[in-house]
Every structure is written in C-alpha cells, then in structure tokens.
Figure 1 (cartoon, rainbow, N blue to C red):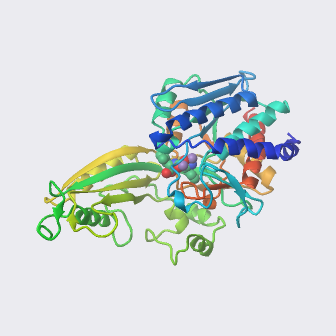
Figure 2 (cartoon, rainbow, N blue to C red; figure 1 turned 120 degrees about the vertical axis):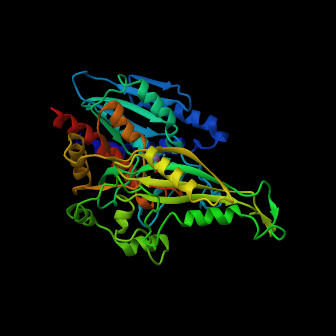
Figure 3 (cartoon, protein in one colour; figure 1 turned 90 degrees about the vertical axis):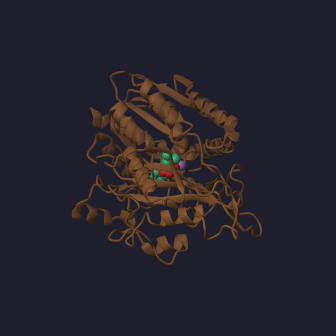
Amino acid sequence: MDNIKQYVQENKERFLNELIELLKIPSVSADSAYSQDVIDTANAVKTSLEKAGCDFVELCETPGYPIVYGEKIIDASLPTVLVYGHYDVQPADPIELWTSPPFEPVIKATELHPEGAIFARGACDDKGQMYMHVKAFEYMIQNNCLPCNVKFMIEGEEEVGSASLGWFVERNQAKLANDVILISDTGMISNQQPSITTGLRGLSYVEVEVTGPNRDLHSGLYGGAVANPINILTKMIASLHDENNHITIPGFYDKVEELSIAEREKMAQRPYSEDAYKKALDIEEVYGETGYTTNERNSIRPTLDVNGIWGGYTGEGAKTVIASKAFAKISMRLVPNQDWEEITKLFTKHFESIAPKAAKVKVTPHHGGQGYVTPIDSVGYQAAAKAYADTFGIQPIPVRSGGSIPIVALFEKELKSKTIMMGFGLDSDAIHSPNEHFGVFNYLKGIETIPLFYKYFTELSK
Ligand code: BES
Ligand code: MN
Ligand code: MN
C-alpha cells in the first residue's frame, strides 16, 4: 500500500469529478418531490461499486428507498469489513442562504480549507464520505492489495430515521455477516488533530399539538377569555428546562451514565478553544446545563430542543387572531443507557400532565434510536488509530460525538459486531446547514487512510 499517496494524487481530478456528478443529483429523502432523484442516486452508487470492482452489486428493494448492496469476497477464511453509508441528503432549504446552488457543486477555498472545499448539499454528509470508501476500494482492487473481504451497504433513508434499513438488517443477518462495521459519517477535531468517534447520542423525536378553541377566533372578542394554544405551548415548552438548564421531565436522568472525574479530565484534554467556538458562531456566550463544559454538554449529556414551532398567522402584515392550534417538533438527544422508547413515554406523560384543562395536547412520536459507545481496545479501533497515525503523522484522539446514527446500535444488536467511525468532516463543514462543504484535503486524506484500516484490521485480526 506504499503507492496509495501517489494513486490519490494521480487520480485526484477524476475522484473530484465523480463526486461532483453524484452531488448534482438532489437525493432529498424527506421530500417526496425528489423521489426519482433518490432512486437515480441509488443507481449511480450501484454503478460506481460495479466499476470499482465489486463482484456482485444489487439494489435491494425495501418498503422505502432501495439499499445498495455490493461485495467482493476473496477468501471466506479472511475477515470481512462491512461498510455502511448513506446516499440520501438533508433538504437544502433555506436555499436563499446558499452562496452557490446546493446541487451545483463548486470548489471554493475557506479559512479552514485553504486548498479548497466542495460546496454542495451532501458533500460531507454523507456522499463525499461514503464515496471515499468506493475510491479506497477501487485503489485496493487496481493495486491488487485488498487484504480481506468487503461488503457495502449504502442506504437512502438515513436522514429520515433509517426505518427500511432496520427492516433489511433484521431479514438479512447471514448476508451481512461481518467482523467489523466501518462508517465515515462523522467528523474529526481538525485537519491537524484527527479523532475517532467513539460515541453517538441516541434520539427521541416527537411532534406536539396543542388545541384551544375549535376554530380561529377574533383576538379582540375572545382574547383573554380562552386559552391561546400558542401562549400555552410556549409556556409548556419553557417549563421543560429549569433555571440550571436541567430537563424537568420526571425520570429523564434516571439512566444517564455519570462519567468519573478521571474520564471527564481526559475528555478535557482534547484541543479546544471556547473563543474560536464562540467566534465561529457569532455568539457572546455559550449556553447550557450548569456544571458541564461545552464539550460535555454536546456529547455526554442529554438535551431537549425545539426544532420547529408554528401556529397562527405568520404572513405579511398583522392579523388579529387566536389560533385554534399550535405545533412544535422537539428532539431529545440521549446518552447510552437511556432507552429512547422509554424517554418518549416519559416525555408524553409529562407533557400531557402539564397541559391546562383549557387546552388539549397530543404528542406524536416520530422516530428515535439508541446511543452508542465503542471501546478503544478493540481490534477495529486499534486498526483505525494506526491508519490515521500513518497518514496524519499524529495519533488520533477518541471523541464522543453529539450527533446520532441510530442504526449503529441496531447493527450491534442484530449483527453482533462493533462499529468503527472513521469520520473526516469538520464541525464547521455546515452539515444540515446552508453552504455545506467538504474539504478536498479531507476527501483525499480519507481515501488514503481507509486502505490502511483494511491492512491493519486484517493483520491485527490474525
Ligand atoms: N452524519 C450524521 C450524524 C453525525 C454527524 C454524527 C456528525 C456525528 C457527527 C447523520 O446523517 C445525521 O444527521 N443524523 C441525524 C439523525 C437521524 C435520525 C435524522 C442527526 O444526528 O440529527
Ligand atoms: Mn450522515
Ligand atoms: Mn445528516
């Protein structure tokens, strides 16, 4: 694998152009207007796996979008790496905040990516990171150095909760049998300090509806005499945190794992600048749960956030009205041991209990998933650490992330193997935001690092 650097340099333009073509297809899984594009993307991924050297590739039909499955089995006695990624992307809106159209990729330099970054929806999450695996695989085939078996499982519903993937995994355990699962769908600390994600938060996502009177009312004739569902909803939401920004739902923290002082001290050793953090977000001060640092608040602590809230009149000008209904979408990020279905129940019970008699409350669970932590003494982690150390020239740091990939906990349950998260994105890459991008350096570094994971994983598994 000594010539991987050279191979990446020689094929750099083609690697970038192929990714750009993939990014042009708007595979937004949340919006049915794009359903044909999502399917077209699945087909494009299938073709790319065939071209890269898989022996067998298929689109596996599911109740939702197809799963692209591909494999190259060289010897049943060798280990098998299962690569997971997703070809769907988040909606691009608000479109007007993009400096270039989200599905017309362009390469522009940024402060953290002086050598350029590809700007497009899905550039980092996850088309760019998924495609690194296809190109790393191509290299190993072209250079006759694939050391073990590979399976690819690339889905199209990650951004909407992976419902079909759960269905697929439960039904295909033998087909998906593997020794380790490899995912690039997370980030790292910086291009100077790589890190490996060892934890993901779980998630419970709910929608709430508050109903007051049976129709919209004149706010002069009825105002003050009936419950205004927007007033009620905002009051209820405000009560979900106390003055220390602790969540007030009874039982919410019961299963939260308290890290030891030693573990928290170790966490605090990672390079981090609160000033740079505030500057990047244009905020005067950070905000969160009393007693925890920013890095603890966004990784080892559970949270509750309103993701959207609506009701009443929001058009131009003024309309004097008391709405009949008000709505909000609420997400709770959970830590390992908190069970998402139990938390959803606790939330529902509490939210219903705090509603005044004058209004009706309905809670509808959307989706969720369990959190995940992976040990750092596993063969997979050690192999990944060696791979990063080789290509970055510095030892990677284990870091727990605040994001969620709910399917990872299910993989462990159904397929009985550990997941290694080799992410190459940066927090500043604006995933889910306008102007999402992925550094050219990061893309190429990923392609360079992944084959070394295969090499070390195979060697260490002996
Ligand atoms: N790739 C992200 C998750 C992620 C990003 C984890 C960065 C760690 C670091 C994934 O595509 C995602 O957006 N997940 C959703 C959950 C899903 C159920 C919609 C999330 O975290 O909001
Ligand atoms: Mn993702
Ligand atoms: Mn995402």
